[in-house]
Length: 308
Image 1 (cartoon, rainbow, N blue to C red):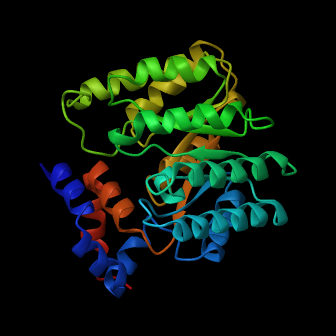
Image 2: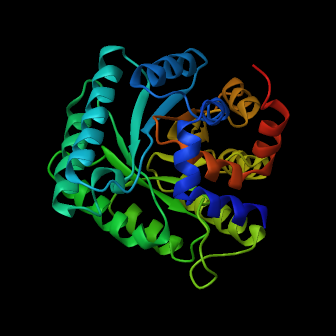
Image 3: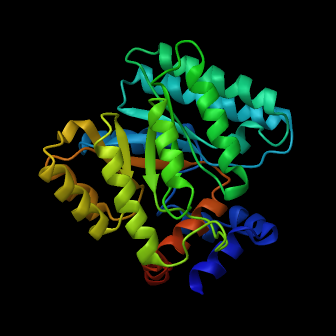
């Protein structure tokens, strides 16, 4: 019930507008969002790199309403790629297709995202673009888009996407992506989806996650195992050790500000860790989905909301 309520609130436009303008809202968001600017994100990235962790940078935003907003978003990502190269940061970028204008003009979105993948592929060292997964209305469109991107000359290996283990279709989607050699970030999923298309019980989502994790680790392609669930982490570590899978052949991924103890522990034990760092003024939907994913995040904020 709490998760459903928080996801519903994440879609409330009036509450979003109020929260993103308020000082209290911005203060609360700093637990999970690095700040409003590229400079804020770069500082957070440098901190993570010094702690032995790589980063995926995300300029928060989705569902732009016109082409200029989409072009502005793309320009910010080009600036991020420039900063990563100039400062030799261990980082790549993550983006949402609706932030690149998918719902406005798909040809424009193809132009903008293809340009970013080309920029990443030509960087020294070569960089990478992760196309994030959104709600189920976008699943097939996102996968088709990523397959198209990956087929463009010079793009192979420089673009990947996300698979959500709560969807029934994910096993087949994984097989299709692996057949094309496309890198995957595996997560459980952060949207409310109906029982016709998604597992509703945590145990079923977890079981599918473990099943897909094992396929990814055995594939020979570099993937991201994105979870804060200690049980999922234990099962991933146990499987990698059992199958003698090299520690540099995949990475764990976690979100900025969540389970920092686990992040440090995995790094200390020699596992690769990438932290997903979001930034920007359009933080509210992301913030509310993080609270919905893990009630402990909400309780943490309630305990600390009045601290300076």
